[in-house]
Length: 350
Ligand SMILES: Nc1ncnc2[nH]cnc12
Ligand SMILES: [Zn+2]
Image 1 (cartoon, rainbow, N blue to C red):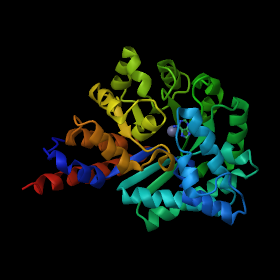
Image 2 (image 1 turned 180 degrees about the vertical axis):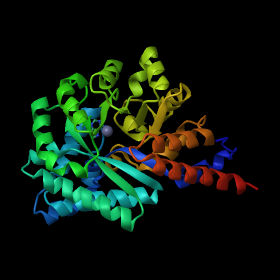
Image 3 (image 1 turned 180 degrees about the horizontal axis):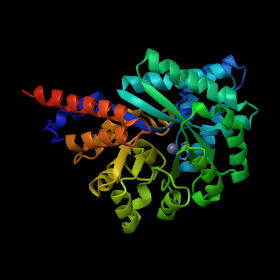
Image 4 (image 1 turned 60 degrees about the vertical axis):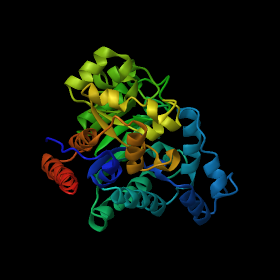
């Protein structure tokens, strides 16, 4: 599409209005401090923080691990199916308000099964929230089961076995948690098995870890998308491959800022990746911890990087729909809506 010229001051409104997909959101990372406290009370648990404010004040991270420690602690209030439902429902309400038409939602079963919560409690609660959101909120959503890479491949296999009776309730698998020291090839066999099962495959790679992890996510795990991938800029050959194969990167600007991957949002390399022809998308990662949902990621990034314009906005939203795991007919319908949204903005300039 030839993207119409849209004045810079109307960009925030356009970014909020455009239909888009969110492809990188950890549902446990959408757990707001208020909901953590409400669930703790409902489940008769005592938190090591005196108040919502005290908990929020602890959200000062220096790197990925410093975040993960508090993120896993926050998830410990989730015990019952309704807790998982309420968490996912709250996210889906926020996402629908951001004009997210489709979300592919990560969940970390091992975080819960290790505490004695059965996997079906986790999956059924999340799945019911997705099903209700489709009819009640008009947002499409599906689930991606993530293996925790700081645990063993045997543990991942055991989790897959537990999840198999629920296979119709998730569309794929991913790989998350502490990246450095846990390369993708550690999970080669379990990803091969998931591939045989017909599941979609994604993995976090190149968030803090080196470009070599992106190569092995592609070549060993055979993933269809790379989560984060921002370290790819350090490897020219990898950049060429990602561009040539249109491998989508699910980039998370506010996450990268809060986890000190870049010193400042203005230093983010998303524009560089986009201009090198990579299929970049914008996502929120863990919105309750990083200070913003999807539209906040778009508007804050565009405010920090003034060279980003309406053409980039269109490309980012288009990429998100294109890289989603939905039937082509759905992509076409949403991409048509996207085009109509931009034409509406162009018409209302005068
Ligand atoms: N940004 C991130 N990187 C790796 N694992 C995660 N789990 C939740 N958020 C994550
Ligand atoms: Zn992530």
